Length: 307
Image 1 (cartoon, rainbow, N blue to C red):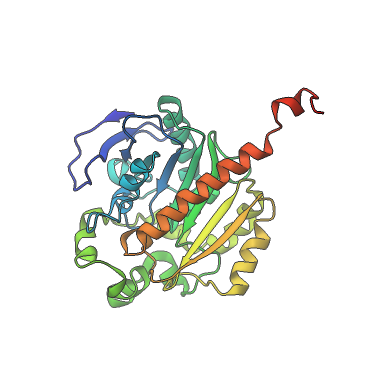
Image 2: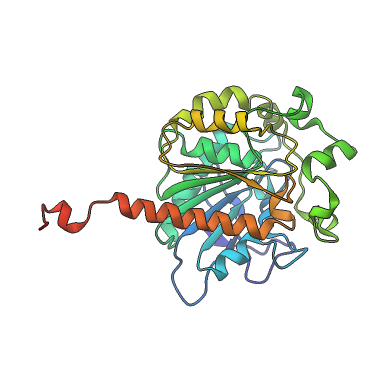
């Protein structure tokens, strides 16, 4: 990983970096705790039409996942997915979900090889980034990922095929992506313009196929999973029946947490509920770390010790 001078509005303590991957260099944002090694790390993947800055909302000090994580003792890396940021010129049509999965796996392993990640990594994804996070850990999670946290992504779409492929525009698109304006601090929508990017064509093609693809991927996941649905989530169905379907399909995950977030729209990490969601994500990481420690045999048990 190398430092970069890429311009952009960032919170204090957040720096732009370049991450090596099997697909070539990816731009990213990095925030690290000062004065002590990290407790653990979070690798965050943005949704369609956004960039890594989605996780560093600057409209209000409470919005940034990156700065909150560093204050709590975690390293946070938000990656521009393939087809965005530095790789947009190299992949103007974007990359398929399978291709992005291979890229993210190699990028995580490269990051972990060059940075202290503490007790493990939480892979956190929003919207299309949530699909990518789930795909990345299906069958076998890349070392050192121990859990997955997803927001703004279900299994059954609540919109038609054209809109599911990213076709919503104007007021309709604003309602789907943002929800009521009172969910955001003044100027939040306008100040997010610098993190918005075109959705690559190949990614659009993938969007409408998720319900079918998830049937194959979800039963293969073997790490703890948490999925959060905003109160005003409009892209995805999230009735009790839909959540029961998700839980049933995540049959091999050792733990499945299905959460609802009041007072939030699809773009959770840019709204007034962002801090609540981010704190819950870090709590889920801590719970996953504790469960992992409890699952390991004690030294005495491993050696046949005991009273």
